[in-house]
Amino acid sequence: SQQGEEDPQALSIQEGENATMNCSYKTSINNLQWYRQNSGRGLVHLILIRSNEREKHSGRLRVTLDTSKKSSSLLITASRAADTASYFCATDYNTDKLIFGTGTRLQVFP
Amino acid sequence: DAGVIQSPRHEVTEMGQEVTLRCKPISGHNSLFWYRQTMMRGLELLIYFNNNVPIDDSGMPEDRFSAKMPNASFSTLKIQPSEPRDSAVYFCASSPGTGPNEQYFGPGTRLTVT
Image 1 (cartoon, rainbow over the protein chains, first blue to last red):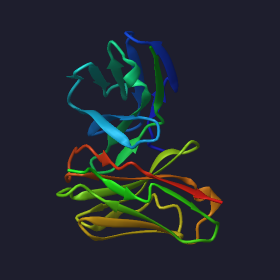
Image 2 (cartoon, each protein chain N blue to C red; image 1 turned 90 degrees about the horizontal axis):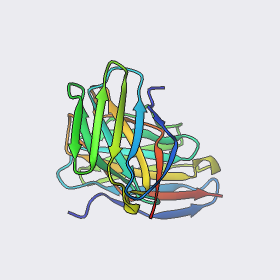
Image 3 (cartoon, rainbow over the protein chains, first blue to last red; image 1 turned 135 degrees about the horizontal axis):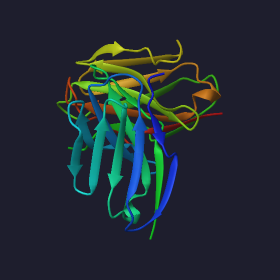
């Protein structure tokens, strides 16, 4: 399966702390995206990083990509209770199709 | 824009019944995707369309599942006959077109087959 693996599966932190989630994938990619899913809702796109980029920022989010290790990380700085959600990485392989990872469940306690 | 619209939001049906899920993509988007999400298997792509044409249906589990996109603003996913193992949340997503486009997800349809 091409499905990405995310690590950790679950993460609990206090508000104000940073949260780091990792994603590994199996074959060469074009782009990698991160999505958030609140409980009972659809996924929401957060950020896209291209295979020739190494780091990207968007507000409190920082994404890194290491194509040699076939891995990416998502850092959420100064977390808030509203960041509580599941986070998924998704990779594309030169088509419109995205392959989603298994997700990390993040719980941020006030 | 209202975003991707799915109906119904919840569906409870008995084994053997036909189920039809509906999706209206964001206006102007050229690609439409159907996903299924379960605890056991995560998020799986079932089928996707580009300009109303099915491009990849390799994720459709079996012949009981079929999907259509008769026009740019409407798609259906049909399960006939339904089975308890089809219970899942089904998502529709659309994206503007080819290339590294982000996908916009609908709220999902929670299907329970008893």
